[in-house]
Image (tube, rainbow, N blue to C red; front, side):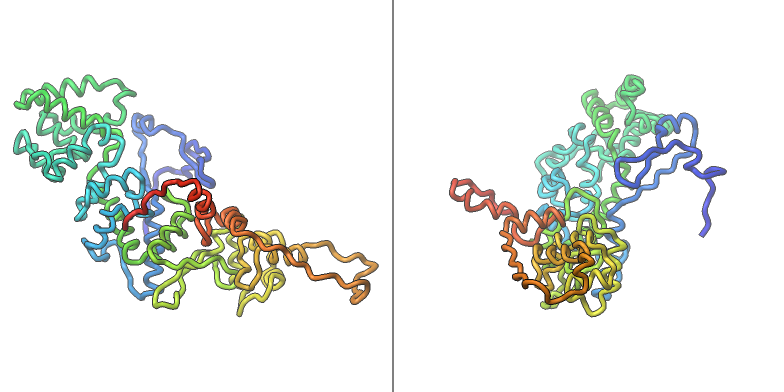
Length: 454
């Protein structure tokens, strides 16, 4: 596979780089507008965690169901998918999982792919500030008549019910309505994001309003058009961008709708991404009928996996990656050395060579529960492994002295277990923390919010 050369040497030897807020990430310090002014080539490569999530989901579908999909071969325009989105059942779904989108989905009620294109583009700071959301919804619901000041602009704004949502529409309004040349319209598009920085809004405003007036458009309409264009300029999407994102919205929604276990597994294996923590992803998967099984020293791998649930479906097995401070290479060693299974904590230490410090991490995550060991019992066995060596005087002597009584550890309360789960795994499969307070809340006659439908 061929490539092309941007510089004579390495980019990191040419451009200034600094550490980003996220671990192991870097950013280029040059300002994008300065680069443009200098005429330096700038290529933006957009990396999306959802692309990795969808690829992992497709791989899981192929391995567990024998069906192979790509973004191009997913069943299109699935009514069940749109029904799910209309209920705002979109936790984890690309671009429509925010609270703002969840609030908008039942009002928008998307029923086709192009509705998703609009959904992606309209819930942005710009369109909201430009007062585009409510006019669009009123026209979509038939509460406001869709009229166009001219057939020419009707051709530009017809797909969006007369509301300009995309950069291409802004440019076409300037060209058709205000008589801008294509070069002027492109300058308008490029400067939309930098009005305040360059202070040239008056130049474009005057040119736009006078051009609209010369072409017979009313002043109020021209003012409204320009304020809308100005409002969404900084955050406006090109239509092609919104369509590309809408494809990922549909793909992730289709996976969540038809294969919730697969989607949750892929989503957890692609963290960090999105709005929601693993605890919320797991809670949502269980609400959709997915059986979620805990981390288990004899069943888990590094990644979260799927296994038969005994009812003809798939259960989600949490992986070692959910445990805080668990290195990936150590998790791989545990799985590789497992063979027919570990019988006790010491077996993991001997066969996988896991240090006592990490054995304690596993015990705190309750990974030995499948061996009949609670957290405290497992930690007690770890302490025995990590304890001091016997003194030389007594080394090798057995049966001497008084026999020690067996240690009986007090059982942990449910609340202690839940707190320990969150400390080690950032989630719990036991009960919601609020369930522990429910008796007190009921006693205080606290009102309960109604459960979400769907």
